[in-house]
Length: 239
Image (cartoon, rainbow, N blue to C red):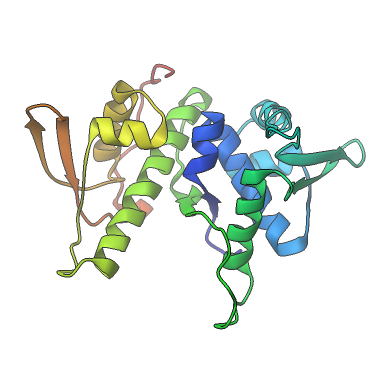
């Protein structure tokens, strides 16, 4: 992984788990699985990298072992090596696990142009460098903001590359974003408000559409922490 502190996630994992914590923990594990064949680390090391508490990571790892497909295959294999280190790997026999293995392998391994493209899913880069909280109770809100920023940034970059007029914006209603991420519309609205205040996103325009609710048109986003305003001082309500 580059010196940039980041983790890659898939919306399919977020939709399965309904938890940004589990999604980010699995993304961290999946990268190292693809790079090294398995992931050997302590819970405290994972927690430090992802800006979580040790208990949050322990709970996430336990929950991830419980996701099984129709054939009873678990999403991950998790072995306690000693008092500290754990060996964790994706299970390629699990349907989603197989797609994740394919997707992360395509990202970290050099590809031959003649290779046949196999099943894969989109991965979004979450910039952990932008995490900045003065209170541990802000963690969920902060991590959700980074996940939402990741999605919006990726969509703007995709529009720049693929649209005929190199469109540098991304338009979505609050409800559309809620459906993509599996979060309540009120949560999405609160996140967008916080992200605007802290400089994580740029909104070119917002308007109310008659039946689709509030529509935001997001613009180019600066990723420089030096341009951000002071972090939130309030403790957001859990969603």
